Length: 78
Ligand code: SF4
Image 1: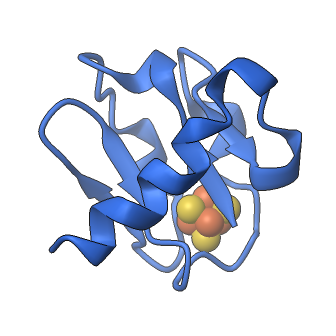
Image 2 (image 1 turned 90 degrees about the vertical axis):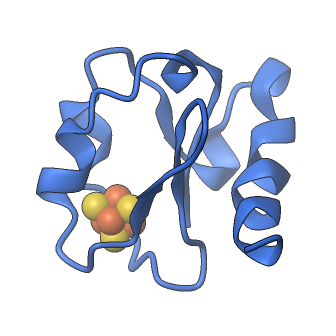
């Protein structure tokens, strides 16, 4: 799946939510999260993010690799 990383924190622009064809981007306390089991890897959300917070999982910069699990954990805790 695609994931959302640190640039989204305290930004939550939500342009990605408008683009997602399966409505799998959800609002958390300080950022948005992608539901990994629902994401269909279409990539539509990534270019519309104004702060470039969205990455394909395997292309996530090393310093934000923890956000891969953060997106999974957010939904596990719901
Ligand atoms: Fe939604 Fe596509 Fe982005 Fe996955 S890659 S979160 S399906 S817009």
